[in-house]
Length: 548
Figure (cartoon, rainbow, N blue to C red):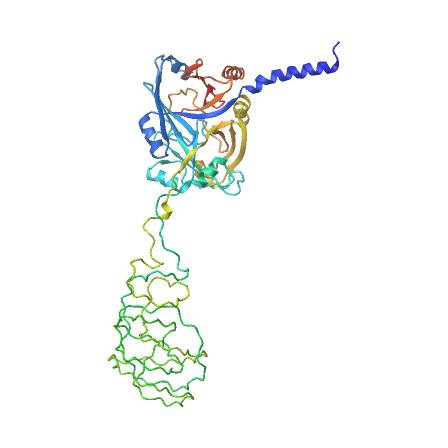
């Protein structure tokens, strides 16, 4: 008589032996998606030119195996197949020879159950959208949409729906940090920038360098040649302030030609005259000498020919210098009144004024740099031809630069479904895909993305061990999505087939038959080295199962 432990061990062994085949029949990879097209050359050109897909293979399949696989009545059926690759993902375009292809309904919306699209990952949504605009693609979305923060599982994702020339739905998608597969994060981060050369100028706040002065043309105004005015000075008493210790200004004298404009109404300075001897040179139009430039602001008044004022003399000793020999200019005296401002308390500087006349011109448009003035002597060499640091940038527009790898690959294919639990029973429980994530999306951005007013979606993502994902789109609102046409055939242009590699095709088909899922293929077809079979999911989407 068997003991209790022996019976328990036999029971566990029996359960374990039964469970092995149940769990071994599963999809190991989502290897691609095939799409039926009418004009193969036009579609290949679109995917290659607009979306950067690479054509890697073209072949024609014909005969009885093709008829069995696609459920076609003619044993001589043939299909041209082009394989395209983007990143590490592949798709196929199918063009059935001699078979009529019904077009995608022009009013198709994403809540219709025949809806299916490919989600193409981009490294720069704005640049990718600009390329689509340049190629005049048909919009579904109004523009790229950024999903808001109130959708935690989708916040920050950018997406855009559009169509190819034959009406097949496609999506661009961009993932922010922390969203999407890890490979999209690294690919978007490591893409190479465009090949434009940046400008070589440095910002203006750097310390003065030893470079040669620029030869940019100064403004066209000339310094004033006016004679001293004949008006009488004001009768206010001079202030007894001490000479100032203020630091000189940092600007260098300009080399421009004098202008004929009227003198400005500047306030005269109240500092005491210095004891220097005036120079005998002639006024203006001379080229600047190579002497060291002064670092102070020169006084703007010239000795005038007016009569002495009646104010009390100041306590300072008069200067011993002789008057200058230059002739005063012949301009008309100015009519401005002397300013009534209070004298400043700063002490006048003891430095010698420079011999050049200050210009009253408006400053040029470039901003002066904030660096400290250098004390070196100006060189006698010819000025260089380079522009100053505030020059205009080069003619390229940095905003239009595109990364070298703009379209990265395919993240998933999305399908419209009627019921999440029913679809889970097929893709998760029967085929063995793994549920990866969930989000409930709604709001203005979702409406503009799908072009379905009042859209509220329950979204679930599934995946296998390899390949891209399968995404369920179940519309909670609005109701009224149309059913997948019952008479659909693989030759119709709305035909997408999601291709899965399975570890045991015969047992997988046996399991699906027991569960009552519909078939497209009339028998297992031998295509190359693989066996294949087409079935339909609960909503009518085609799924190609193939052996490893």
